[in-house]
Length: 284
Length: 158
Image (cartoon, rainbow over all chains, first blue to last red):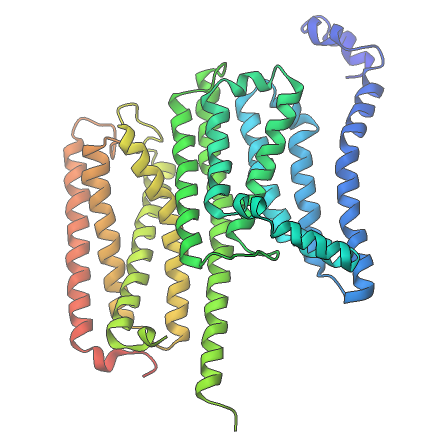
């Protein structure tokens, strides 16, 4: 929105033009830079940790660095910039941002093995204390697949079926808390199904498969329900578009999770098979 | 591990893998052809019951898992050298036909999730849909019967 443009558009859109200060461009750029700073910092920390820990334990796989950067980028794009701005008044844009923050970013972050990297970067006593914390009862409870699924999909149902969705757009604090919850709940859920980082008290593959299918089913049901029952303050056309985006967009990420899950299962069955063969036919 | 290699265990695993894949395949064809390409099915039909929404959500999620999981099981059967293709394809037809019949009778008619097509003579579409489902099941059962009869010779790799 430069000055020339503002003048030309004044005729058609007097409101947005007059609501911007004279130095709109500079202050907007500054605002975006300030808002992006935490994400840039997060993006930078991981490669530094990878390099530091590589000196003691050998190289850290590069594709994991890529997954981390993709995760931070997708989360960042949902919270800062044009999509985040649009999501304040469009349910469809909100849903696109939700797909990035609540589905894609958590999957990328899980695939980057963040806890493993953290444990090998920290000094040994600190790492020990951290893994003690990870094994503590309350965390065990939250990272249980069933709890994580309920917090994840149940949280969404609570957001869209009560007037929380409406309140969130009135209050910055609620907005922040809801978005932190969306990301964290989805991250914990994804991590409770796809074990990448160390997970104490692992559940079997069939157990996790059942929880996964039920959680995906609940996600689909909620998406379809929103088609005819829009959240408070959302026009029905937007609800219909948002509902279909949640349903089909969700599918894309769900398929990726199912593929990764089945591949883990197939591989671990392969290890068991190889071990059994080795027992039955000892090398001569 | 014994259950994987015993004869009933092999038959069962070929059956489960095929049936899962068949169910997923029919659901996938339903979604791509009838929802996305032809636009005959509606995403949300306002006459659908609450239980219809639950059933749709469950089968939609399960069908993705069934397609992918069924194929990984197929790879596992091959890896173990216990794949029986006739048994497997028979199960694909049975699983696919059973889901199509459930979709056609329970989900379309009883739960009224959506209709096959929004036309006056939808009854014709319903008959074609459900009769083809029954034919799939019958063909699958015949294939399975033949596979079980000569099972001793048919194991790939044995």
